[in-house]
Length: 153
Ligand SMILES: Nc1nc2c([nH]c(=O)n2[C@H]2C[C@H](O)[C@@H](COP(=O)(O)OP(=O)(O)OP(=O)(O)O)O2)c(=O)[nH]1
Image (cartoon, rainbow, N blue to C red):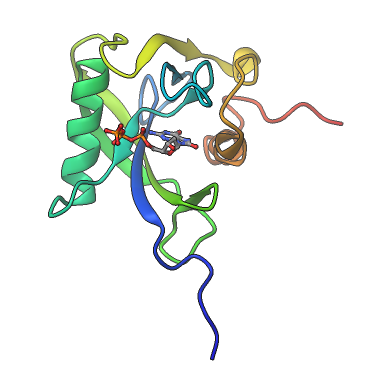
């Protein structure tokens, strides 16, 4: 018998908020304040899907709670796991959508102390949480190089 090493991962949802879904030039990054082990790391706004909640409801709820904005979702940014999710360590997997703001101005209301719009040249200027690095690289590729890619070794 085989066991799926990813079975039982808790689902997290994340929004890759860009300035314009049709013509993206900047990505919104948010700096975490909690827990201490992750504080100071930059991430996509989002969070855990609550019991009985749909992933769609969860991503809208989390972004509104954290940044005070309403978003419109674009396509998924598919990850490598079976559900097109991205691995976040060995406890979580994250479903990511591209998104844009339709109401409000993003502010670090809850769980973050800074938000920043990153253009192509600055995409890797912030210390992303380790699990987010491949996601940021995929965003760069997906968006046609508008954001640039990882620095070449
Ligand atoms: N939201 C989010 N979480 C991420 C990212 N990258 C990453 O490793 N994580 C981790 C951090 C956490 O361990 C976990 C998500 O939990 P969270 O703390 O954001 O969830 P939440 O807002 O529902 O928090 P809580 O109410 O349970 O405290 O995934 C990311 O880009 N966005």
